Image (cartoon, rainbow, N blue to C red; front, top):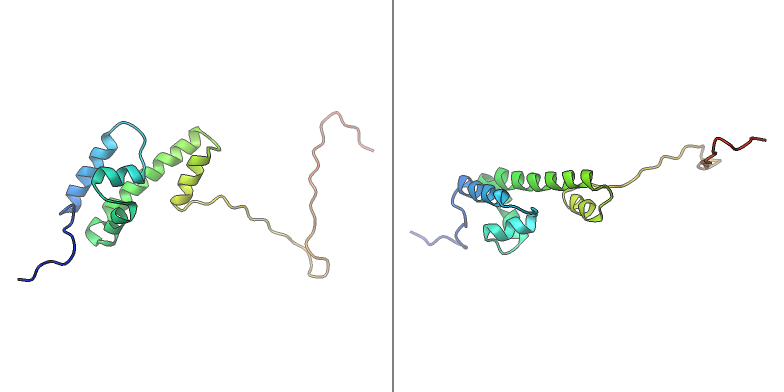
Length: 125
């Protein structure tokens, strides 16, 4: 019988990993991928995320990431314009880009739109 290659798994089954993840989320305090990584005993985020590559653990790890993303979404709603929450959500695939469409013919180029704020007491010419 040949020796297995590589380091043995930290968690033998997805159920064992889920039990440890649930214990992490039961703790008081902020939740993060880094915190989860350390709690589960992995050396870095990549080691934890590598478990996603293993079919048996994929759902468990992705679900834990979704729970943390949900936490940041809720925080972003209660604390609008918080730079940290925006940054954290970008790490989960969110974006804050703006798209502008310009119309006009090729000959005249894009049209310029000017927005002028007028207060109700201003007289018009």
